[in-house]
Length: 328
Ligand code: SF4
Image 1 (cartoon, helix red, strand yellow):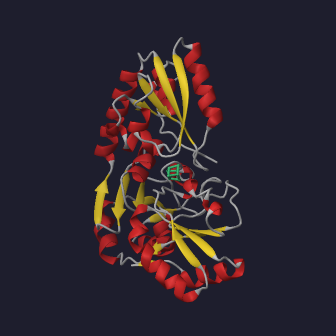
Image 2 (tube, helix red, strand yellow):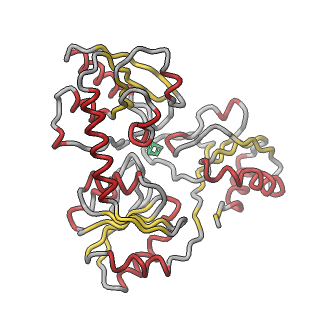
Image 3 (spheres, helix red, strand yellow):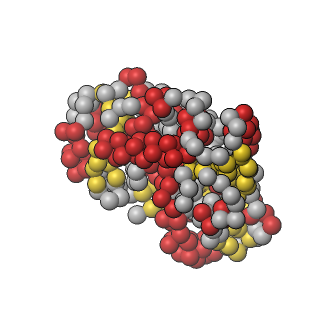
């Protein structure tokens, strides 16, 4: 089902003269890790070490692999152009082999005339074919170029939908091709355009408006609960592409100016248990924007994004609500 591009990987490992190679991949690909090791061992002279810790994106490429391995092969994400990675890291985009014919026929009646096409890196190679098929069936397809956090035209991340924003003014709606709720939700909230999500893996097609409304209600509730907080805990990530210390410092200053207390906490892997020792009425995550939304129910106190903290403290209006995003 997946193309791990092992010929290119083996060639790169040989060129680097690596003896020990660390492999990193998201949870969904880890089930293939041992087969990948066996295959790569048969093609190289290297020994392989699989990183078992969770991995969420190219923002999370290992910064510590060099204490145990000569190079790192990171499967499943495109590098973030704005980040300066070590030249001893190879990013391998892993495409899924999908037959779209029935799915596109099914989604076609739901599509208006001008469609913005967005996807994740897993399906980026399918974009030209999907675009051609839709155009052959009477739709005008727009594919945006995002900012320096995304590598491909039409690619969106949970923290960055700039490729959608670039064409939002020209389209009637968006078609998101990919898995999960967060990306199409972000496109829906940020662009305020209708979004249809087509999941090539589960074969499901969903209209996102109900979920968008539900999440906005949830966020409004979280902000209302945090508005009276006397003490905030501002969470900062150590991960390479999620660390926003300047933002955390600005938020802390804002809280102090509003007569609240605010402490800064540094974490690699975010979890409610890590926060048990600390006193706080509300948390603010400056890390991956998904944390406050996806993991909301896991935390005993309201967990906000930076923009939501601004609303809670009266620095921004609810009518100016936006999802948190990271642009570089
Ligand atoms: S910050 Fe979050 S949404 Fe952005 S690339 Fe990393 S894991 Fe994905």
